[in-house]
Image (cartoon, rainbow, N blue to C red):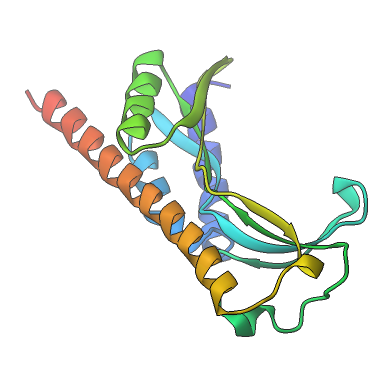
Length: 187
């Protein structure tokens, strides 16, 4: 399958998930901007999340009890199980991008670095280059050891704020890249 054929198929799937409201709202402007590029498209992403996880030993058996892609309140966590198998997690954004050529992949990586994203890399694949970018906020703690109060909620929301701020800086960096590409192709 060619790069363009894979992009068309992936965009068709994305449109379906957007219609089903299964795409994290905070990341939609960024993925739309990346997908507007001729030589790049996103394959999967998460804007970052707060999650309550019931750990059943193996990852495959664990249950996502609650997931939020937004700031939370005490009210959101009031009814969660308080046993030692229940974990509160804050996870960073993750974005997967495929580019047609190494120059485009390199440009996106430079935009990521300019936005302060340190976790990421490029791999060669059949249809081009695969980029994975990830934020750096992370928390994982057993609920049984936590006091769910305003201080904890503030910590969690501060982590999400830092995550969303980095996503916004990346959006602005990609926007500048897209504008530069358009200006170059117009001359």
